[in-house]
Length: 347
View 1 (cartoon, rainbow, N blue to C red):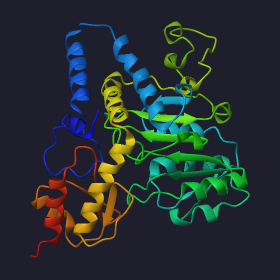
View 2 (cartoon, rainbow, N blue to C red):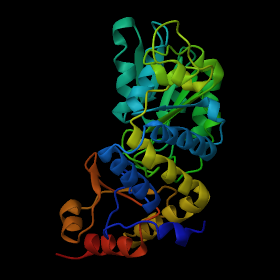
View 3 (cartoon, rainbow, N blue to C red):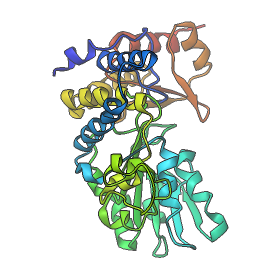
């Protein structure tokens, strides 16, 4: 599918520049969700068809990040999935993370302090240099939430390998616009409701088989069974042999919307989405006299920015005291120009 055809599937109010907070659905996802909700309202069908959307979404996500379906776990939130990893590390594990990272990545590790898990932090820009031989886990965001800065993935991975540390990457602000090879990390987690254009309540965890063998499936239920429909009742424990063993039973309707959204991104290609998004971000940067960048998220310090944009009908966010704007498939040059005009207008 070409970019123009994909963009025609969205119906945003002009001025939405806040995908880093939540993404908007294409009509394919919206229509599928409305149809399922109508089925639920009237009790027309059994639930199995809604559940099958989870498999479609898993398959599409796996293709987007270049891994096998067997390595992808589905869940509800980033913190829930990181929590599985954090609860499974040995007592006394040393974790290194960026000091400014989003708390859904940090809190699950910090919550293990009672058993001696130590969390050290360093500025994201100097994370690789902070990896010492006693670090066991390096957890970091591929793209920082507040600033849009893309991590030095190569440097961090090289430092972690040298120390023998496990790498855990949060790609929530990356998957959907930035090409990602999830196979480079021991674990990669991503929430679906931002750049993946999916309903909230969808998230993915990619793990290597070696790491997965050490993760306790503490939230396992029937859906994590080798045969989910044969796992409704009674012992023994009979979990899937692949990443499904860590699955959380799906919130059906969130996944009904997620599957077509992910399939659209795949059809357009992440490379095409990346070029469009970063092109708009650089148009915005140029309008403010800033140098070009490499991210779909731009963080700037402009006096009274929130009020100025609100008056112009532009919706963005303020994070860490700075304006944050973010651009995706449905963003337009007119949106960019409206934001620039509002921020540069005198008075």
